[in-house]
Length: 284
Image 1 (cartoon, one colour):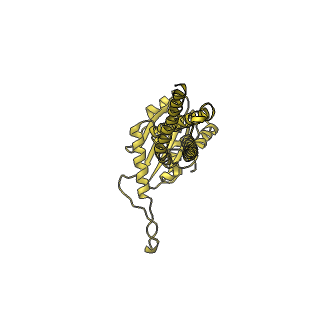
Image 2 (cartoon, rainbow, N blue to C red; image 1 turned 180 degrees about the vertical axis):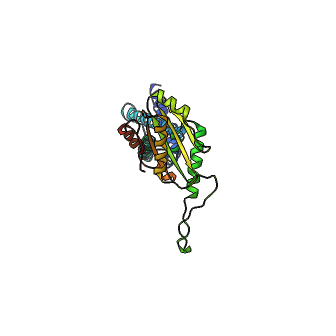
Image 3 (cartoon, rainbow, N blue to C red; image 1 turned 120 degrees about the vertical axis):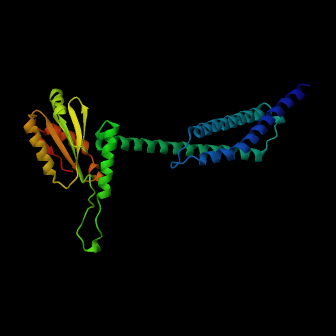
């Protein structure tokens, strides 16, 4: 009776190995396919990543259980254990395939994370160093107005075909901007308050109180002008109104490309270098 009981127990252990082998055989192909879905070029849902890790964890648990049972059968129940070499080979291959696929999966996740961090750093750099039109103003309405004018500048910026024999021309559209001048006034809050109450702009110009000690705006030029004209205009205004305590920095813009480049640092540095009452044009 004792012998029969021991033999039945050994056979039950054997069935556990067989069931785990069957599970691995059915699961490993699906696991490979799941891992293939994960590539640096794809946007992988978090659910797939969780599923892959869960399936791999279960595969490893099954392999560990098989190994532990095999060691028990080879030791205490050797006389009842009939080793299946083909099955053992399958189990070994399943373990190798699962480990190899999971290693590639984790490496791909590292690549995706590295790519994401690089993109975040590039985005942060652009945010800190490039003059993006949407950052020039805080007001959504003013942002839209600036973007519209920049778009129109780009549409007007074209050349006539060289084989036409005509000189370079630009289409002149009534009431459409030919160039822009971005400007910044900085200084003590009380002087900025006075400036804000006195400055008067035309219909297409935009002005915004950007901070306690700063006013930003954009002049819209409907005809071709030399950048020095805008500079002289602001200089006369500051002298006439007595704003010798403020600084004024101008940025002439002829196309959206003029806003490309690390200009924020140049703007900050230039403003720090400027003296009170000075109007300066930043060459772009």
